Amino acid sequence: MASLTLGNFELTIFSDGIYRLDGGAFFGVVPKVMWSRKIEADEKNYIPSGLNSLLIRTGKQTVLVETGMGNKLPERMVKFYGQPAELLKNLAAAQIAPGDIDIVINSHLHFDHCGWNTIRDKSGKIVPTFPRAKYFAPEGEWQYARHPSERDAISYIPDNFDPLVASGQMTLLKGGEEIVPGISVKTFPGHTASMMAIIVNGCHSEAAGNSGRHSEEANSACHPEAARISPPKDLGESPRGIAERDHNQARDEHPLTDEHPPIACYISDLIPTTAHIDLAWGMGFDLYPLQTIESKKEYYARSIPEKWLTVFTHDPKTPWAYIEKDETGKMVAQKV
Ligand SMILES: [Zn+2]
Image 1: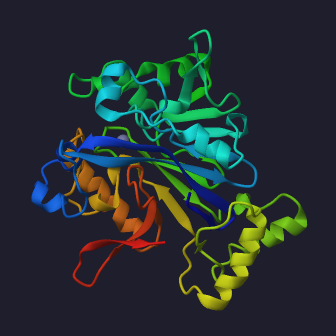
Image 2 (image 1 turned 60 degrees about the vertical axis):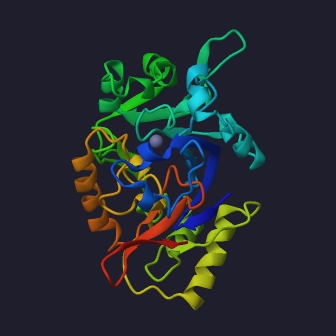
């Protein structure tokens, strides 16, 4: 389980497990001789795909970005994809109960991104998995999911979202909203028309603690010279302890020269794995592949100069990395 400190926030990756996808569909028009150098396919041409959710502890709220594949897939889909259903178990191993989650955000409503939004109770009724949480998802996705095309109707399972919309527990977003201080969404069309990335600014001014002394400490952790992002941590430690220690360490070892705040972005299926960072390497699932390219350009125009940490939904090995341009102009993933 990967974890790091981003300014005042603590970020942790929780996986719902690994499922299998057809390698050709995963890499669209890219020839197998090229993609097979990056990911090995099995005898049926399946490749392993991760299901990475991002947990953000802001100090005030516990926010879960994406809820994996869940445990409600129909049998005909389990045959193709499997159904690892590991998210709740992995959260529990870190002492996080469903009732601890304050906010759930879905980048879009494909079944492998919002599966644990809901579960069936003993009587078979669909109920929210995270009973106290406010859920958020793109309105355009929900509208589309009501009348999907023949091409991607299988990707939408209404039980994952319709009961939440009907009860008012899910808020539908236009794109561009700030959900809590420091956590906002931005639409990047391409994979679908309304898919959103989740942008996390660990040094948002209101993210500081609420008492005077704590505010000072929290703000100092976000001084431009302070640690931007610190490496994986033992989860037993409190977020504040981690932030303080890393602040001191980083000042000694890596004085920061630029003034960008530490930002992480859950980029979802715009760049599903580190193997997809090249502009032309899109998934066959993308409904609007030319828009995927334009959205990637738009993303890189900010994320590269501002050194954003990119979070990859479907990378089974590298859940997050910095995307940079090397001397030859080629995009590369720089490990955290
Ligand atoms: Zn996906």
